[in-house]
Amino acid sequence: MSGLSLTFLGTGLALVLGNGLTGQNAALIPNYDIAGLASIPFVGPVFFKDHSPLVYVGYLFAPLTWYYIEKTRPGMHLRAVGEKPVAADTMGVNVYRLRYFYVFIGGCLAGLAGATISLSVSPGWYSAQTTSGQGWIAIGLVIFAQWNPLRAALGAYLFGALRRAILDLQGPRM
Image 1 (cartoon, helix red, strand yellow):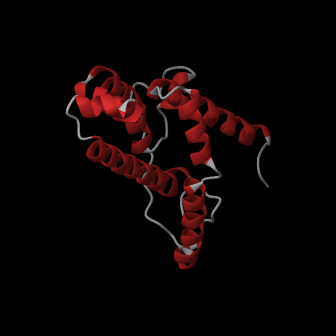
Image 2 (image 1 turned 90 degrees about the vertical axis):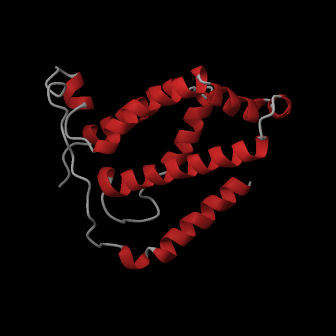
Image 3 (image 1 turned 120 degrees about the horizontal axis):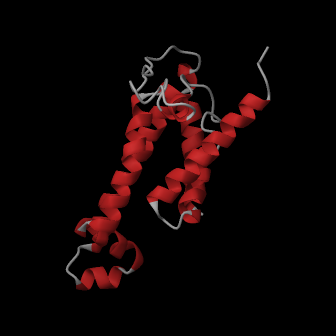
């Protein structure tokens, strides 16, 4: 319930504080191609042509996050403080400090995602619907992927492809 309340509060604050920014020009992040990979048939134009550098960072981030969570000691501590906090405390891990740290990291990543949307994917300040509820889809994807970053990334690519297909199937805009 508190998450939903914070969502409404954030949406309202964004509308009030961003009201003067509507329709303003913003500095945009230019799109780039990955030389060599962009020419691969079908896959190249979809994944490696005309994307923001932050999209390419996202391609690397999912497997690195999976490796960190599954194969490193700090990743084991992350899983422990979330799933078995008493066991983590017994191991000598400061549960509260680690939880706050990872919530802070999550907030930073959410801010980076918002910057990516407003500076690359959907440039400019449009409305409260700029993200179109994608955050809720992301939460659902994480749960559906059973907290596995690789599965969540694959689901996100699938949802992105479906969203793009819906736009393309509507035909050219007049």
